[in-house]
Image (cartoon, rainbow, N blue to C red; front, side, top):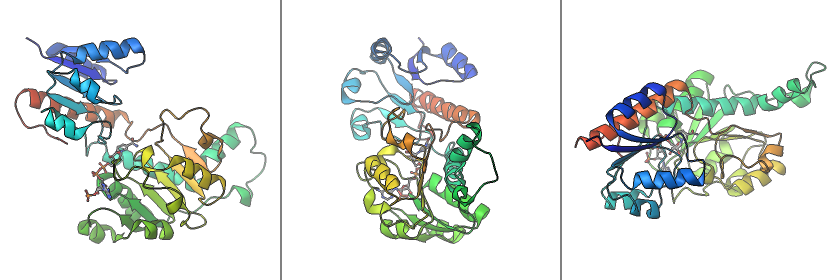
Length: 319
Ligand code: NAP
């Protein structure tokens, strides 16, 4: 008998065909309606395996999944899952580290460069037919090369951002992290500092720390009030690591010069978000890992993890 798998993700066509052939598959691209949610819960009540992202795994949902053996998240962040409770219930949780590191670091550098050169504002100016003469000083941006880059959370993605800054742009690297990373310090000439020093001394700050009980709301006015006059703040981790109301207020009153954001407190970003009215904030719709190659690799890894667990083997990337 084919095993029951629920997938909530936009799987690429070949993988969808493969899964349909080898599993009793219930597939949702996303859970868009109440009917989708009801059908999802019904399918989960019989499923042995789940592959997906953007579904909040509550205790109430887990109570309805007596046969569930493996949850393969198509993400590296696992803030949407009650990790301890799943462990106690004997459900294996897997994620997709490494395969998304470089694409997400690219997104960090994209935002850093967009903010430095005010690319969003310049694009709007051209589109709105406001480019009528050569640029004046009020349109100028900032250099990136040779500046100081501060990384909050020097893990896989943080290191990949730091490498871009150090190797590509001759930047000095500072980092804030739970543990020291001596190998990064020697490879990138990076210096570990406390959070205040990082915000005080960096020209560009990039947040790549996971969201957890410890890091929720870690960054707010306490940090932004320490920044240099032209500091650029980039967040590619999770919106809730930052107190967004304080970020907005600091951008509005000039405490913080500029922000580049891929992630937000609420996603999709509400149409009435004050961030959208700010010239000194460039916002992307959580594109961190969303390239064809990376998303396919994430799906492949998640499916490999499911197959391994159902076959009684160790998954490749357990949380
Ligand atoms: P990772 O390799 O686990 O790195 C996380 C780093 O943060 C580690 O160095 C860890 O320190 C440090 N850290 C964790 N908790 C800390 C704390 N309380 N205080 C200080 N340092 C702490 O993770 P990753 O693969 O780089 O991914 C990082 C995050 O990026 C993910 O969790 C996810 O939320 C986000 N992400 C976003 C996107 C996007 O689309 N924008 C895409 C991918 C990932 P230790 O080494 O000491 O444990």
